[in-house]
Image 1 (cartoon, rainbow, N blue to C red):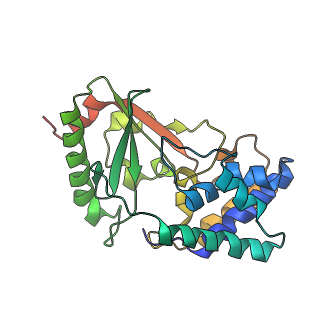
Image 2: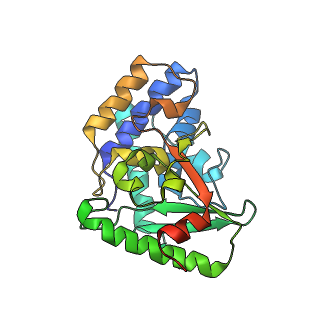
Length: 244
């Protein structure tokens, strides 16, 4: 995906302020819990998840301007700085738009998706390309011989039929709302940008209107397309993608 637009960060800042006021939270806490700012400014790995006491994050928040317009520029410039300086990594576990990580402690694989296909990601004309990537992925997983492991994904994309048709029904039918009361990455926020990083204004407006007019205990319920989680055994995937 190309770099995110500034409007994407403005949306999250506005949302964080609404939620901060509505739920009697400090803006610092709301920015940490309910925006992707931490991940977008400092990066993320499963080994190093967001931590509110991270000195780099605390410094970012401490230096945040008081004026809203300046805040918008501040966070976006910090994002551009991070993107321009971060190391480009290539993973042996990446297959086109898809990649996976394995957590030894839980014995689970997690799927990640990145909208990097310049020809489109989920259109009917790209189904064969996505299916080929997924088949190659599960051939790789099969070689790892962790037959008792499970495979899961956490994403708003589970609301989209164009995404779901790429996977076995035994996987998709397990989908349920993500219960963790955080919104810190693209599991929630990816729905608001297209593959070029531009804001989807209709969904962005819907989020802000809901945040202003409704009151939910769980952050997931504010989002037009809530983050879902699906998980099942590897054998269903091997059968679906004809991996022997």
